[in-house]
Amino acid sequence: MEGLNYIAAAIAVFGAAIGAAYGNGKVISKTLESMTRQPEMAGQLRTTMFIGVALIEAVPILGVVIALLLVFK
Image (tube, rainbow, N blue to C red; front, side, top):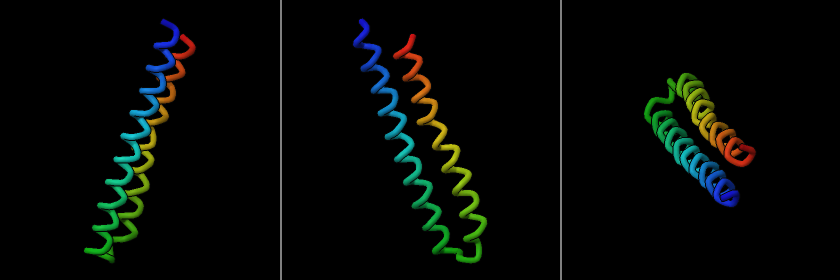
């Protein structure tokens, strides 16, 4: 059963990474789309985008923590 912990940890990290990559791509593409529609709002949109990307990047960090808990349990 020890091997299943490693597989579960790998799946947790993989899922978190894929989800964060998709989320970041979506946020950045929509921000760029908004900047082309309203260039005068570019500064505010960029700030909001960075905050959103930072929050999305918290997900893979939690995935790594869960994976470490599964491996070293």
